[in-house]
Image 1 (cartoon, rainbow, N blue to C red):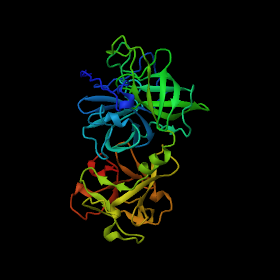
Image 2 (image 1 turned 60 degrees about the vertical axis):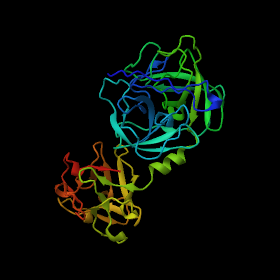
Image 3 (image 1 turned 135 degrees about the horizontal axis):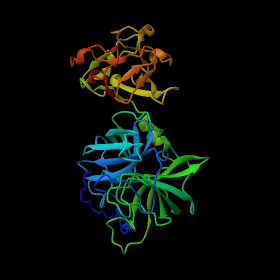
Image 4 (image 1 turned 45 degrees about the horizontal axis):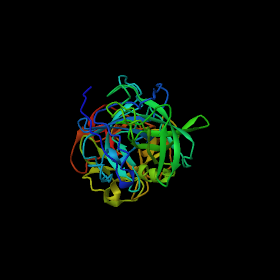
Length: 388
């Protein structure tokens, strides 16, 4: 593992100058004074590596294709501003989800392809290039952290003795007070968020189920590896996420282009048609509403089954007559949720029809505008892979 020398960053605002940002400059994994997380615990936690190991952060899976993490992880200079532009990250960003032991192959590895930042707190949504189908997302809490409440936090930052440990660690925080968008917290039993833990989940357990209450934001880092031994404070600031469920849902459920990986063209309904049975083609991507689609979850599978609704027509992607034949062209039809309209967006990006078991494909990987989009036996070719 490459060990890049980390940079210690100061606080974001004058009111919090004493509390630095705990950004790591290498992929790391722990909280000082915490304990390694068993493989079955906190599987929703994610390690985030930004650029060529320029920064290391933590995050949390909140939907099959979305993480929540700290906006400060992506800010150009978080010492002065945590403002982050929406869109593709400036640096290539990789997320490892559901892998408490980084030497294992558990969970999934994905690229972050889009950021949707908040403007009022240290929070950003990060869209992944493909859904994660083998890790269950965590639900957001609906009530604020309360004074004296004990919460659990997790992260992929340093420990007291290790620069870049290979295990997710967890620790306990006691809530000192809550403000509108933040909570001040103090680590218990020597636990403190370290460099690399920024953006990691802060959770409460209700009825045996974890709920996401906040994200690690800033920490004094007392006891963390590489921090002055005179610094003993384990307190910090957590960014509250309770109450953000509707904001998350708005982003997760937005209409977006369905883009073919191989051809770089988008699935389109020609001429803005709203008619049942209109055959579908690929076209130069334009963000016109006839090219925007929304994946809407339906019951069954691993949470990876969807109807695919067009923004303009409000009709759904379907195989006509529930056909199972190779080469049949996809159409739009009034949404019914029948199996010929249900699609599985799998872990390698294919869009597979539940009824026929065949995949949506641009034949021969043609890049020609107007090429029909058909179903075909599934392979691993890029002409069968789609990003949304």
